[in-house]
Figure 1 (cartoon, chains in turn purple, red):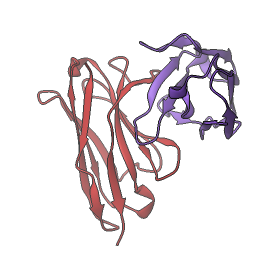
Figure 2 (figure 1 turned 135 degrees about the vertical axis):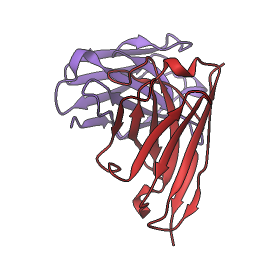
Figure 3 (figure 1 turned 120 degrees about the vertical axis):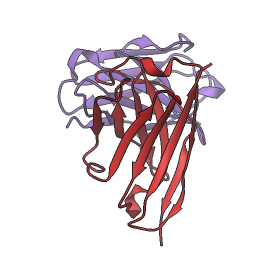
Length: 109
Length: 122
């Protein structure tokens, strides 16, 4: 089973700043089958990025994903107030097991 | 608009059973794989189970294999999860999630319901 490790655990930033989130896999994620989700308190997760770098429907272009193999990154170019949330990466390349990282919390500094 | 509405959660004693439902609207339900993902209180996301659009293929996490059964009724646009032999560690919010295609394999989850809370406690 592929284990995903996200860092940092918590990111304290101000609105307007750039956020860089990391997701490292214990084995190579085939064909970049890596997704990112955003979850706000009391809400369901929302798909942001799939295929490591493709934005899901309706996702603003301040969100971007990159990476391949074992190292992936989510960048939020300029944080808006609504972007403060928990972010999870997920690999879906080694189906039929889908695994998530433990999450990175982006909080207001 | 895609809507996924879970129901059936509640308090159950260890060893008990519960059946969750997820009613889908705004999609051609018969065209999409569906999944269940859970989140224990204050914890991260854990994939539980997936089913193909036809219902012919099912997949389970090791932690629930042999205890949980995923199914769907395409005539009712509804996904189910029968949960037996429940344990305290099954306590979580259970989300249903839609896949991008007819097979869940190598697909992310593009829409999620709001979840239903299952509490296993005596």
